[in-house]
Image (cartoon, rainbow, N blue to C red; front, side, top):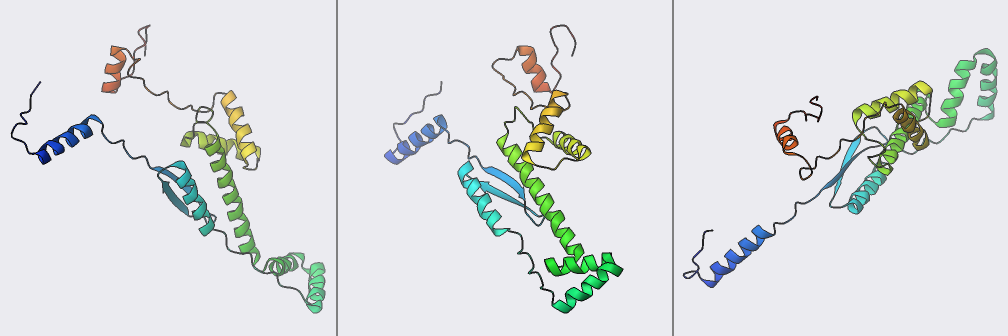
Length: 213
């Protein structure tokens, strides 16, 4: 052990040395940043950060308030003459009349209405998926890309609406069939054998007791 001669040190130097040794003995904990990326109503993505879960939630709520969907167009009221003409067109050209009716009722062309409904459906689906993942322990569902793809494909094939309840039921069904991946078990260096530690360090597979891999 190396001894440090402090006889010729000033009081300020002794203080600096004591502070340095105290910091070395009790290093400051690393700062944890909580981060979450969410999909907005318009399809864009926003990433929020917080020093803790509460501040992260506050940031997400504030961001949601700033990314509210645009207000729906005000429907146009048909005059008596326009309703009469529309009734005549319903008999002669139903498709054309229907498009006019939709445009009048929603204040936007049919194509715009369909696009808005599609965005709304996608937004609600993303919200349901985020709610399910946030409320489900990783031991019950491991949110990796492969699992997400399997759940989506299974629900699409079954014609299920993307809701929290339907996602939960689909996950349970797929997991019962062994079709979902599970979260990797954290490596415990204190409970591992010497061979396992060597294999982990070198990135090699761990050999079992039967001599196989």
